[in-house]
View 1 (tube, one colour):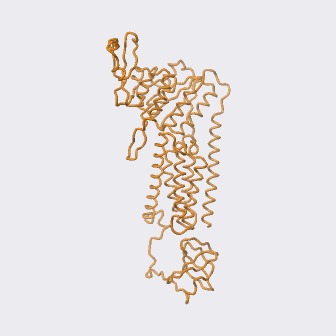
View 2 (cartoon, rainbow, N blue to C red; view 1 turned 90 degrees about the horizontal axis):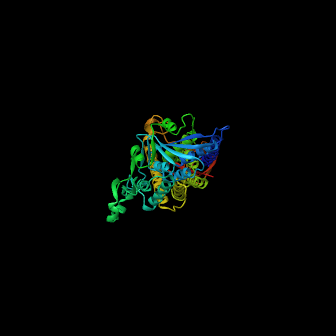
Length: 499
């Protein structure tokens, strides 16, 4: 019971620490959004977006855009360097940029804006690229059950194409080519006619459906992207296809081109807390597995020590990182830790396994899965794919923790750091270990009551009728001084329980 109380108190302390960290994160974000005084007109802000596109970067971007607007910036340059990432944050980021009012937005691509990065770029009013930069290839994919990745269903592709089409129409980019970044089923040609000498884009189907009179008006045609491939452009192609407005060497060249070389831009980077949350979010499945394995070891060992501390810290970090990006809320955290409590009850108080253990495992699974997503019931095909991916991720964490538990119990006695915690030798009579004799009439002691002279973890000594006996419990831990009862005698083995 004392061990259970210690664990419960540790969970309460962890909850308090989490609340303080969340408050500190909020204060750090709040302090970062305080506008500066005496802002000069014509101010420029540069917001770098690099690495994985995820929920953490979306929260960071909204904070930095707010700073730029409060500081009076009439131009925001989004500097993109990404291979893409999660679809939902990419939707939120692109919509947020597209809805910025009274401020011009520019996407500057020094190296790459692939996949979700291309959607973000097209949501900006203008695009500028460095000579070796790349743009395109936004086919939505998710991990498959067979390993590797698979393309998501047509329903999600339709939503993504609609986003590309909407942003392209709003900002003056070629709509067909924008759609060709998303789906392989589009073949696009650039044709030139006498009526339209600057040329325009049509699909392969539209070209085939032209009558002879229309075909005679064609002065030239050029295949831009064939069916079965996704459109990816380097800078020269993006300029030719009217995506990139200009090609510039670097950030300074862009500012000079915009006649802003004498303006000192505000460079709004991510802060330490945002980077920490993004990093912790990426390693959350590993921490989940480590935390579960450490708690299992804690429940199986007497007292409260290092495994319990490690387990609680790992799980606290997992839920903190997910909470700060808007995924894990109070219900998911409660469900998960109720599952942990049921597992603890099963191990510490209930012999066998099943009554509390199975519901505990189910609650742990539900709480962990829900903390990795922002919905409870999937409503779209994308939600279904994300749910399947999260189930797979959590199951991998559980399997990994199970393997870790097995390996630790098998090999830990041979590790220099841990072999002091585990008995590695046999207690034989040749080594001087002798089972002490029990008092005569031992069978008459069944049902007798006594007091624990030592802590029973699970073996120790008790006193019954002025006799000191070596006893063992049936798995429970009994503290020194507690009243016990002898429930069974098996040869020289006396089994007791607490009263």
